Image (cartoon, rainbow, N blue to C red):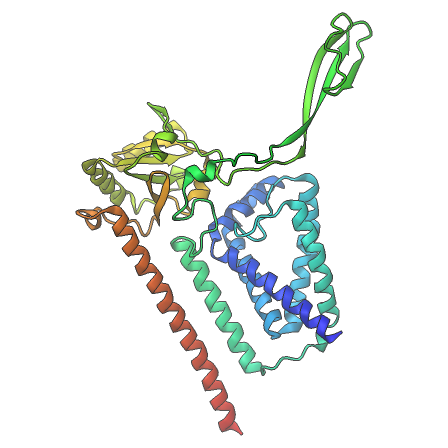
Length: 415
């Protein structure tokens, strides 16, 4: 029994750690998902709190997972896990039945499950959580109270730093189909032989003599009996979902030239895309840099477009307010939110491949790019960011180990 309980505790801990971490590295993604939930359940007045709940949920899941996995503060963590499952298990059942939101977002973009898959996953998890909860007094930690507090505090600081960095810049890991290095054209392609959606069609015909409306299917509808029956209406029901390309509904609609998606994705040269799903919510601090980059792109023969879902009046006001020197194209809002977690953000393309992406706080100066090939500049910048992650990780590990050493030394001296 003890072995089974520990297996359940560890598995629950791993699931919570994974779920909390993949949400924590993409707080704006969770913000959008909370907004979808609020709107779907008629609670749009709660939209202002979506970002707060995004931070809180990922932090709570991660900390509960760490506590259960390492067997520290297990009693408190088991209460937290039970509360989570008590709320989200019935919620996912409602989502599975009514389907107001197609993806619950429980694992962010790292692992996308259908609502029914999420519900059955939660049922299994709930059983394990109940086992751990009702036996919570049987778990004894190998760490003393002070050591548990250090681990817990270090985990909170670590997760908060991850959340804040990913919010202020871009997610440190990108699981979306628009990640750096991904090719948009390939992401839009449906493989040959891939299954298609399967539907059943119901046809309704009205009897001309009696006025009766009767339902038929495609195998027996009275298409030849035009004297007695006339078509009334039809409906379709999805029986089996087919293959869906990772990228869909990505269209760049230029105000003068129409659909330029293929031109942009097939261009052998560089294309800069300023992504702002809603111009009224766009940060103003990067607009001067973007105008200078647009001038740099024009001098070098590169394409430079803004992509937005804002209407024409909003675009006109924005252009006049910030003296914008590039054209705005219309693109689906959901796609823009998926392309980059920043408003605005900058994306560099070459022949449909995403070379690099920048949040509005990190957009490079035009002077940095002058005289350099954009690809070489991006590769050097990405290497610098990678090196910085390594340094920060090692520094955090050093501080953590030093704290443990000081605790052990203090315990020996106390004896």
